[in-house]
Image 1: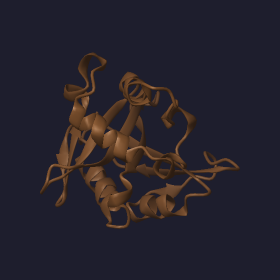
Image 2: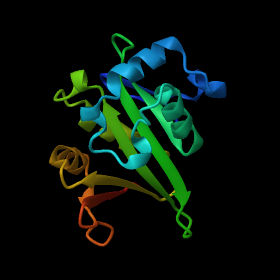
Image 3: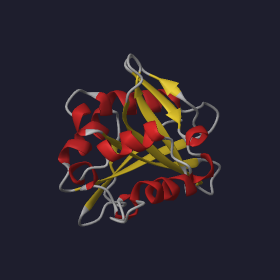
Length: 173
């Protein structure tokens, strides 16, 4: 559904060319080891947690490569890996597409407006021609991510939300 895109400070690129055959290049492994800290992962669902085993980064990459698409979020100026955008798209049965989105950023990138810039860029990059509904879930213990979604135009959907997770929706086309 989505291809690579850029914003004023970010380049967002499919990571598939870099993780073919389950091999994680050293530069990406180093970035993931630095990025996937307990504080970064604490608000994410169980499938996005590290296993704790000796090959936990390779296992994590393998899981992310199986479902949906994962994009590297890169600093346009330096090329440094700042984070990841994770998407999974499904036909909605009515001619449209539902795309679940999630993102995470290296702790050093927090508080600089990158998440809002990412989501605004993502929304602008959604291809025209089909109805697309973007869906993001946020734990109630993570109000910062809820604010980011709201700044990008998402609205809380009470029917989809639960006692521990708020679901936010944006109808793009």
